[in-house]
Amino acid sequence: MKAERDLTRLLAGMRPELDPGRYVFTTVDGPAPAGVAPVVTVTEREGLTLVVRQEEADAAGLAYDYVAGWITLRIHSALDAVGLTAAVATELAEVGLSCNVVAGFHHDHLFVEHARAEEALTALRRLAERSGSFPD
Image 1 (cartoon, one colour):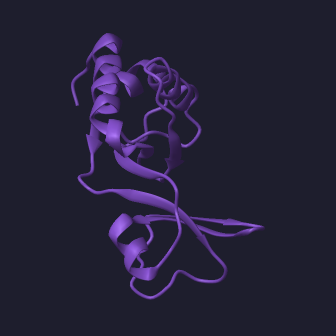
Image 2: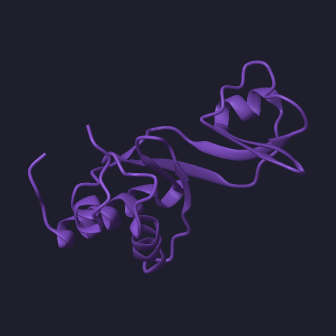
């Protein structure tokens, strides 16, 4: 499937999907500890940032202060598409939600406050509905 670049099509077809887990952001010096399977890693000067399931972080004794829900936008977005992140972040900001966005090769992934993840999903679905629809 070809990656989508058109903003209207991206928004209308994003099909947000909430993962049932709880995810946390933590940091380590060196590699991820045994038993920890990160869904995202980011190498920074200060250490390796990991996004992992909360239960894995707890079992490994990793510190964190933010528990997130993970929403995947199911449309195959092009890495050079313009406006999707801005539109999604703006929509969530309007209901008072922050959004941590990670772009994968195929999809964009949003980490939002876990306690309000269903609310975020509803806001994103409303944005998609307002943007129209198109056949797959």
